Length: 382
Ligand SMILES: [Fe+2]
Ligand SMILES: [Zn+2]
Image (cartoon, rainbow, N blue to C red; front, side, top):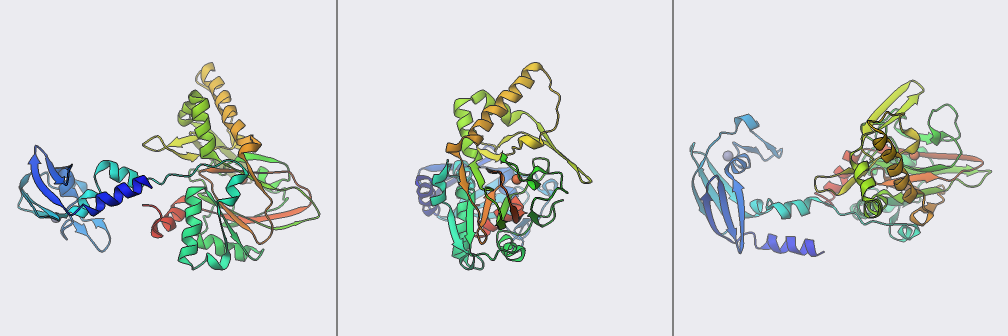
């Protein structure tokens, strides 16, 4: 909230440009008591005139090699704009409101969505729940669901007919189905034809899907359309960002190892050989956790550079997995027909208790690009 207010205040005062002058290669612009600095190469690249920028497609007109290496020949400003005269005769005019977005700290804070970490059952009261007809083709409903996916990594859609067709309607509204070697919409039952442990009825410990893909599923959709003549089969979820944050606090050397060590994962079977290598915990440029890839079952057999690296691997993975398997951290829920659960496969791990009887789970994957695209068009992130 504080950050948002700060941003708004700054934005409101944007029009009050009190000075603009050249210092070396940079243009210094004074807005109230703040001085913003822009390099000449940046300014020329960000010229918004029709020769330099296609407004209709929001694309630059010039290749980076075609931007002339020019210097600032003159500058003048009004309250709201800055005009730059270039050494090659070109003129660029910048709105103060445009420039102020690129004050570094403001820009950086503005870009990042901060997730709300959670642990245990308490999250069930916080995640968004909506009936299908208040979600599909309803902008407020979409915002409510997507905000929950951004904040907690989970959302629920109710009153969905227990069929694959009805489930697909939910998937389309979440960004569209991601096609993989498992198909588009998939159906999991006790089917021995697949090489994956998901197709059995044993307990599945916490994991993310597709660690062996270069592009793991962004979202996963679960809809248990049938469970008859048996018990068990509850779904279990945990906030992987919470677990990784605890690991960082309590075992910083393990956290560090898992952000760097390139762990290999694979899927071999039914005519496929998938493989990918990546750290278990991936960080963004500011060291915020942005992606957890963890599936203990799908780890490849690996060689290690040293006995130290080998022992670090086992210690770090076990210490992380202990948070995942701690019941206090988990949210356990029995999914019933009509009830579609969506979760962020880059953040939330899932598992399942053992079950008996006939159980059919249908759903799909949605690519991260596609669901974040929807979240951006809804104005929830930048
Ligand atoms: Fe899974
Ligand atoms: Zn221009």
